Image 1 (cartoon, rainbow, N blue to C red):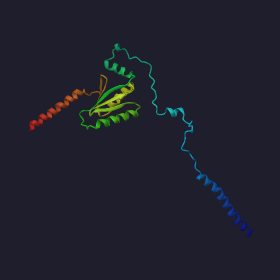
Image 2 (cartoon, helix red, strand yellow):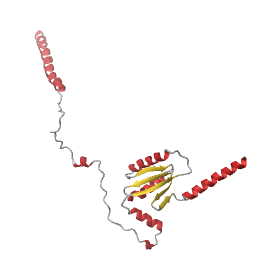
Image 3 (cartoon, rainbow, N blue to C red):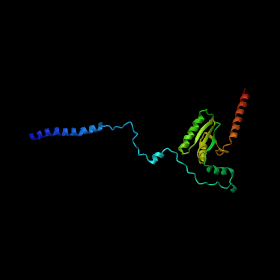
Image 4 (cartoon, helix red, strand yellow):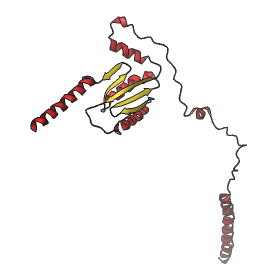
Length: 201
């Protein structure tokens, strides 16, 4: 037994020394730093692929083959014919959206609505720019005219919008009267209230 103890006394320090010698190079490797020079003019980056180079660039839209509108002689009414023409428009479009005039709003509310609509249209992949003209009118520009009907549907689905004008065409929700009729009703209501106030005095 005495011999085993003597052997253990020699083996334990030897194993500890071996572990220390194995551990020191690992520590040294962790201390080593990679030196990157400040001058990188001679470095060639060949990792960029074509997809990386094209990222962020607008994709060109291919024009579909010309699809002539249906013949007007086929009994189609003017409104349907105009919708068919709008579908085939390739160039940019510009128009106006009228907000509900019976709702009082601050001057800064129309620009906020225009910004919100622009962002919502972008989430639907429709490139458009909407700008408030006054507190009841928003002007829009659409680079691709074929998106005009989608913008019209979007605008008329918004609770703040009353009508949508594209060129000579005016679009409203079904059942909504013309804007002039609403304005006349508002004038008559104000005149009636004014008359009632005079009678009270």
